[in-house]
Image (cartoon, rainbow, N blue to C red; front, side, top):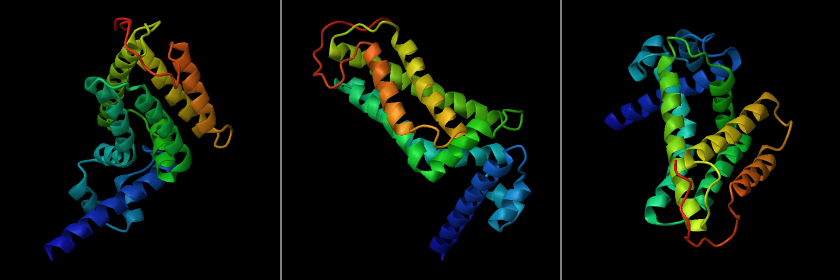
Length: 221
């Protein structure tokens, strides 16, 4: 019986998150009330407060359903630097994966569209902004760590700091996704993304596919 109760609670939570995704995309976050979400999910407003503290808490839970796998992939690229392995292939692949998942997975696309175009960072949603900044900073740290280690493995000196290189890579990926979301089908996100990211990495001095041989140190951060 306890197992069934837990399963029912999880089903209700997922129904609320599914309803929130649909309504946030259609009406915007500020234009959607918790009562709207409860009605769409076929439950009560009280059920929302059983699972979530407020709208911002619900929004963050919705984001975590699709962003955590991408964040974990990027973290793996950064962690390879501590294992004395070349992290560039993993870093590159994590960017490709983010673009591919956005292009091919409907839920990921919907949530990214909401986070990009349908949310206002007002007082109510300040926890969402704080989470966004925390995730962004974590990703930048992982990418910078990966760039430092990759430069050492490839025997190159980056033309900019590893931190600047990480900011540039993030700007490319975010910019590609945001522009693609504005005009679905306007360009091939995966193809253009791969070409743009590879051009950026080559511009930093990496020879893609080349075997790494540690020589010089990276430009200081």
